[in-house]
Length: 134
Image (cartoon, rainbow, N blue to C red):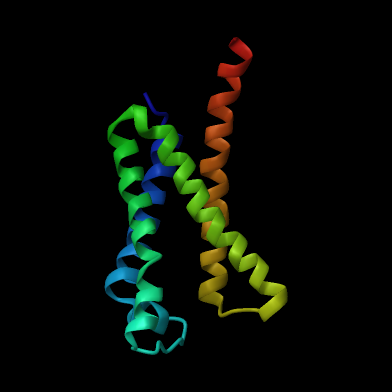
């Protein structure tokens, strides 16, 4: 059975990935507008903007599934960590190349980094005892 820490991490991951995924897919102009980014409404641009939202939503769905089925906890934590840390690393790469973004994107970086590291640490801590027991 998943620990309370694991359930909280997966719940926060599901919430974060769900909100972002839904907004990227269904309301990208609103989401980007929060950061004063005006999107080009061309079909090509909107396709490129919406496409990453679906894998983000898939992460949300797997995180929810991990809350309901203990067999999916580890895959859900791994995918959550990969998605969140990938976005955080992308933002960190952008800092020296592009400068400081708005505070809202710095907050997103902090959330992605903290939640992604938390999910990764849970996976590592769960696997370590099993490896030493062998």
